[in-house]
Length: 157
Picture: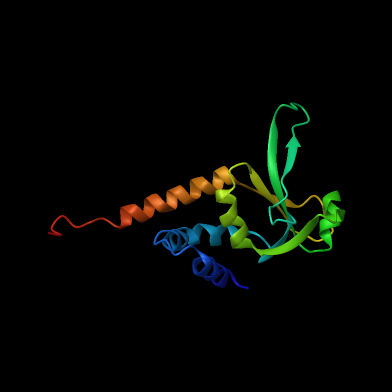
């Protein structure tokens, strides 16, 4: 599925609250720009049986008090057990998720610091990390830019 179709699916499946579809439309250029830097249109995400994404906590070797919470996005189903022992757990399932949907979800996942997208099947060292804070900053910049472009004329009365 191409990136525009992924965005349209996000819009179509958004709550009909009058805000979310417009928000998805407004931030779509940011999601697409980041997705275009990645190699795949979908990745496999480990989920538990209730659908929650599996979170991995990483500790800094030099300073074990520094921790980072990440979600891994695998390039193929076959790579899940290769890169994670969790892939062998029968309580977990790897589900294909469109890349723009992963990025959109990242914004809402407060405990998650980043998502690591593994780009090449069979290789453990080619992960691309997308930090939630960086994505949030790009989205805020885009929303501010949109507000500036929607100036209300002074003679609107």
